[in-house]
Length: 155
Image (cartoon, rainbow, N blue to C red; front, side):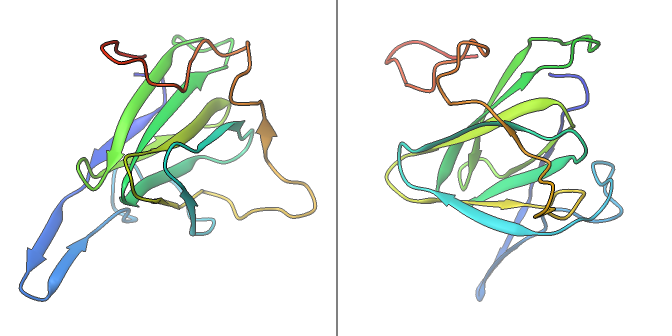
């Protein structure tokens, strides 16, 4: 696991009315600080990658559908420098992922449904000076292929 990355398996509590799933609590070990809550989506096979933040930690999960999440440690002083992590999260594997600053991350909608992604970053989005640093999904700087090769594992 990339140094500083944390995960939390999420528990679904169903009853006859529907279900409830706590995502992030301020008494969780994974909790750091609150900035805002937002939702974004990815249509099937769409990749949204790569980006990192220099100030904020991202805490996110997929609440509908499934997505492949990839992380890349770009911190030269990290014990896991240049390490890749890959997760498959969503309805079939509810998990919260906490990504520290200077770790590139991205995701791909997998399956046949739109994937819904909820994020609770530690800082609100700054419209005047965004804490967003991007690379294209097919950058040569990160040794990762977002395509699925049948019969091979990634990561």
